[in-house]
Every structure is written in structure tokens, then in C-alpha cells.
Length: 115
Image (cartoon, rainbow, N blue to C red; front, side, top):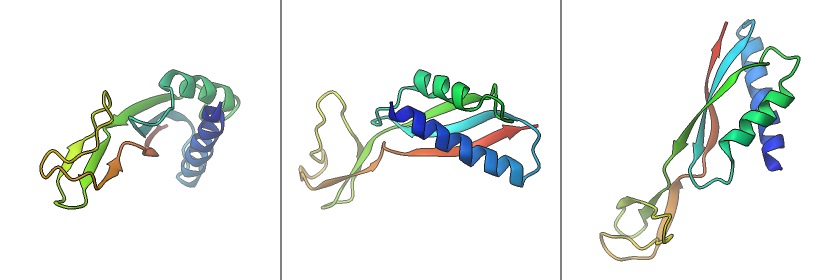
């Protein structure tokens, strides 16, 4: 259910930006969402359709790009993809387990398409 509060935030950010730039209508919103977030694309659009009724964003399509999850080794600085099948976080370069997630949990409004 947390998609509802997140989609309200998407709407608020988009409306503020559109108003500040004298837009008449928001046609589409480009989002970047990390692949290991638990947000479902379909539900985000459904909730957005609900919260945007009666606003200049009504009918806008959400275009979602998923950002891959990557880890960086704190020992050797090697960057590598997170294997979501095993959730293995050991560095394939130096075998250290001292790694940090550097992408994959993002959630941001990247761009708006307006009229």
C-alpha cells in the first residue's frame, strides 16, 4: 500500500515543477526506480491514475526505467552487479565481503513531458 503515498509524492513533485514552468498539462512522467525496490510498476500507474484525477496530470503515463542493483567493493573498489538469484555480495575480484550497495534502490522523477 505504500505505493499510494509514493505516487502522491510523484504527483506533488510533478505538479509543482509543471506549474513553475507554466505547463498546461503533464503528458508523461519519466521515473527511475531501482530494481530491488518492492514497487510494482502496474500498481504505481493505477495509484497515480487515482490521485491525479482532476489535476493537470490526469491521464499522464508513467514511463519507468529500472536501475540495476550494483555493489562496490570497499577493499578494491570493483563495481559489480548484484546477483538477485543468490543475493551474493562477495566481490568477484578480490573475494572481500566488505561491499556496499551503490545502485538499485533509487526512486526519482527524472523528467516530465508537458504541453
